[in-house]
Image (cartoon, rainbow, N blue to C red; front, side):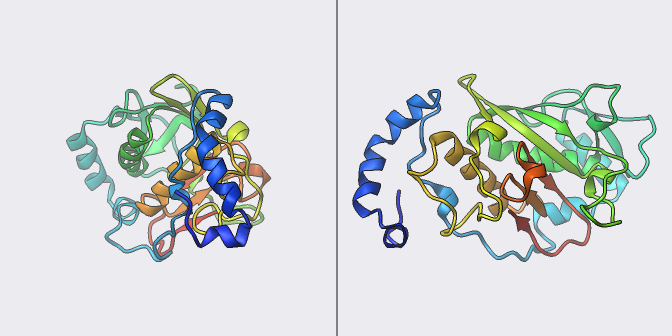
Length: 253
């Protein structure tokens, strides 16, 4: 549903009404996914401040013993990794579905499929949002990269601790896919969520679905840092999500 405040800024009062009426046809032309008409990504995000009680902060603050206990309680499809994983407090690997969603990760011979126990717990929370958007499978490019650093800095990336995930595509219940590099239609520096984000009908249905999904993840404060193709060219083909002990703000761009 278009918000009245957006229409004067775009000069699209009549055009927006026409676009809403024709949106299903556009969705069918884009591979049958269909366009959401509510455009929930245009709704404002909560404050950037992240409370200590947020799911992201609570997970990031867990000790290895606390995390292992919670992992057992939730019965997630992950197994403790007994190999070498420098920098990862409690390394695990995905061996089954996580709260109803299948995460397809790099194979057992690749270090990129290792993740910290705390990230596994947040993937369990993420699954609840994914299922609401009909996502049943996620393709993961990497999680653990032992030598990963922040661009242009000496500080380690959360990938170096197995606390970050790069997701490239989502498979839906109807077997269709949302592929970030193909479907996001981003622009570097452009807001991802909120009233200033690029609105329909400029974006095809798949792009709106991806934005609705990632903005809902941001509203739930499941992660501290969320990077999309709007961040830079290095993220043109994936969503980066991470948690960080002691983080007090959330970034999405």
